[in-house]
Amino acid sequence: QVDLVESGGGLVQAGGSLRLSCAASGSIFSINSMNWYRQAPGKQRELVAAITSGDYTNYADSVKGRFTISRDNAKNTVYLQMNSLKPEDTAVYYCYVDVSFDGQYQYAYWGQGTQVTVSS
Image (cartoon, rainbow, N blue to C red; front, side):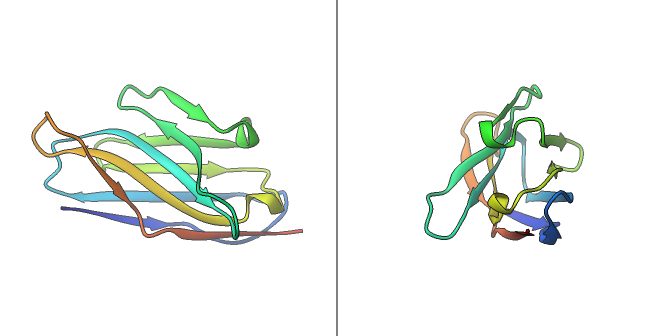
């Protein structure tokens, strides 16, 4: 079992910045991909950013150049630095990780979500 604890959400004005964190704990052997998704009211959940164990990153077009995903493997933590925030970034943000307990099989876990609200 893995616990994911997210933090860093909140209310910010347009143009501002927030930094989200998601820390994984448990009997973890390794973590492959670490990802951030978001879901706005009435919309489907969408991938915002992803980072692999080799630090390869991928971003949604809507956040490229504004958001940066990073990870600290020693802390089993993934971060999302969000700059130049826009009202359309308002959503609940979820972390999603692929965890292995034995180096063979991967298991997916979701965080509980953290609200990000950007006012105009």
